[in-house]
Image (cartoon, rainbow, N blue to C red; front, side, top):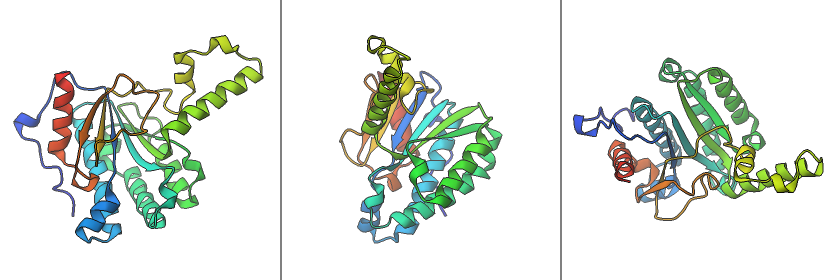
Length: 240
């Protein structure tokens, strides 16, 4: 149904120089899109998941080594359709675990956030996907699930505080590097480019890691995000 969302790129779309090593993207606007177009929310979730996969696929083909998607915030449980969203994401992750492109390109998928607090079937789907891709090292994809950028920093501070209390480190040893080592995304390079969709507002995505990051704003709701917008973001990064 959504196979044509990202058509085969034209020659002018192919970008081969000064590529970001890590691109992070928000995925906002699904509920606004559903209300605007009077579409069933289940259909919009399915379309949005397809765009995540198509974006992932495009960035792997561009040979961008690390991609991060902000999939689910800690505030999502307040949504009217939260159970439908979880069902849709569970199906999506189960499909990814069987996706031939993921396995052929050795894409390792990691989850950033407090995903273990979510409903059981969703947690099982996450564990299965992590297990299926754990030994891959071709490309790295992060899904921020039950995530909050401020909480990520708070949890890092708590971890460091426990180390100080246990007398494993001294307070004077706290540095930028130590905090980096303590955040959820400690094992990844900071993003070179963050694509924020939906509105020109800052995001809490990878807050600690993004002080020197190029930010590209698009007014498009996530279900409207397409190959052209992705390429525009990368081309804008290349100008910097």
